[in-house]
Amino acid sequence: MTTSTTPLFRAENLCKSYLSGTEKIHILKGVNLTINSGEMMAIVGASGSGKTTLLQILGTLDTADKGKLFFEGKDLGLKSNQELSGFRNRSVGFIFQFHHLLPEFTALENVMMPGLIAGRKKEEMEGPARLLLQQVELDHRTSHRVGELSGGEQQRTALARALIMKPALLLADEPTGNLDSRAGNLVFDLIRSLCRELSLAAIMVTHNRELAANMDSSCTLKDGILQQS
Image (cartoon, rainbow, N blue to C red; front, side):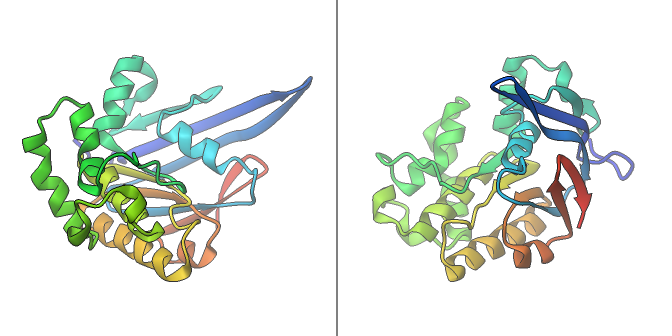
């Protein structure tokens, strides 16, 4: 259980490097961050600065060379791969620049998918999925397949999918990057309102400094170091 003295999520001294030929490229050089329930944090930085790599490490989709992740005070490095998979399914929602929806399924089926993968029954997931689609203003598009949705509608569907398991942490990688300003602002406003309503912690990678300025905190990733903007 999260308390006032225990942050929801904490990253400590994350380091990551890659080999490019014989040269070692240091992407992250001791990144630290802390976020509590209900907070929104922006991470900005130039292309190639390592923002996506950092987000993937925070979501345990990638591993750091060094450093630790703590969720509700517990060291995620002590969990097995199977336990981490369960953690991602239950506790983390992901939104990417490209929605990664399954084109052969409807909006409703895409939103239900994380629950079905977790072994829950369709009957159990349909009601919550419909409610989320209503919250992202897509209750009239539930039976439409991905190809019949606009870019903004696809990203809102992806947002609903990210929230279906009621995660505590939302990780968003340029979720408005492929949208026009109107659709992008709508997606951002929905993320912000749902974070407040559901007490979600959200970490969003973005190039949009105007959006970043509207979050609780904004950090810049530069030369492998995360600094308060």
